[in-house]
Length: 399
Ligand code: GCU
Image 1 (cartoon, rainbow, N blue to C red):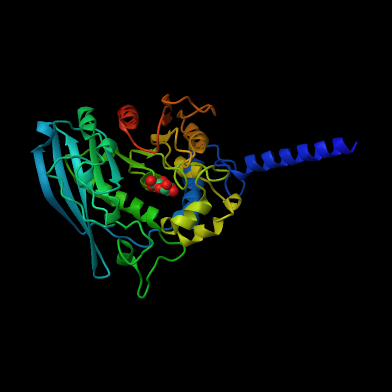
Image 2: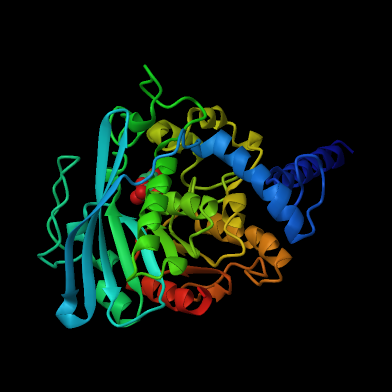
């Protein structure tokens, strides 16, 4: 009798636990007032804006003002780069605020003789000169005492294949917008401070939002460049830069598509019940990435009123690609996949297909359509295999 009771109690506990887990990931299609979202109109006019405001306020922080490009300088333009196959451009964008100035350089390779093509826009980790051995690329400012050599990250930027496929690519060194350290006295932040302010308020931007802002300003420029098809700019990023790309693409609907490579926690992956890196860990190691309000979720992931599938859903109906790597338990591939699967709910409202089955795919077997996913065999990285999928995806879905 006692045994049966213990067994039953244990069973009930399991049931309650799994029940509460299912119910802790907030429902994308149910508004805060309990309304069921069944149409594109409801999504666009009420649920999407509601989620945008919530996630911005609680997690990434708002951009505290309006800063437009104050000047553009074309520092370099070569119509015969890459043995005549590409146009190379290096453009400097300058911003002004509070008697301060911030400039960053964007490096672009565009396919020659093409008119309408997708251009991938994404940050690089270590300076524009590291993405290719081309000696004409300007050496980036050294920010963190770890100067890198030319071309050392070329495996992550297969520029030749991108150009050969007929696509373009544009990149910026992310430290130039906001250095990746817990210091808000440098980078873009001081240009928007109010009098006496020395760090963002608790609902104002952390670095992910600052980097996302930079991607949107880069897009402002790209849209003005006659050699680029500004309607086909696909924002892309790996890891922390994938988190920034997602938030940029979620907010700025001018991006024609969004690609996340191994973006993990605070990126594509569902936070609730996440394996590997958790919000608690991100908040401890990288408090600068998100706004002050987000710190209340340290050790309280179960109290999140939203989750990352909602960020992905904000990209709808535009093409979205989420990618993972098999040895990247830190980012948690299963929860990255689940997030893309759950975001598909919103694509369905538009009559679009995404990931229709909650069945985790085999390695190196991309699946989906307007929302696509793959898990590559290997480490946390963005490699030729990944790019080949992104290129095919962009050519297929970015219209
Ligand atoms: C760390 C961090 C991740 C991040 C990664 C990266 O591992 O914990 O959240 O994605 O760095 O940017 O490479």
